[in-house]
Length: 112
Image 1: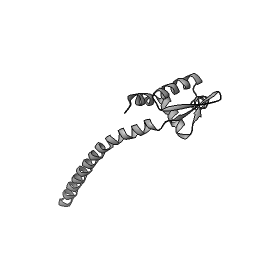
Image 2: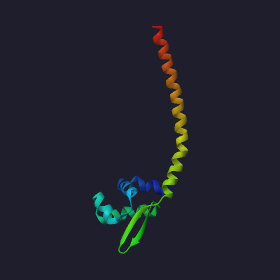
Image 3: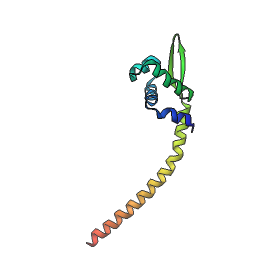
Image 4: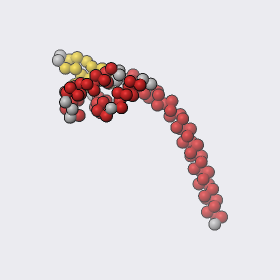
């Protein structure tokens, strides 16, 4: 997993930008307006996202239209998948333990 991607997404405004771009590509002005940021702030966050390989810009006349790149999110999914197996095993063990405890309680209640 690329640590630049994680660092870029850790900042709340950048994460909000990514959420906005999930809907559709947007210009810097649209992003700034929707997040109530000044345009230079939005541009700075978009530069970080671009350098991390999360977004790309397409030039259309005098506007830059930003959209998400798929690759970093696929890498993130792959990284999370490697941990999902560990958590599933732990939940299975917890489920076994809870069933054992509930079984003991049921036996104790029948004896009372």
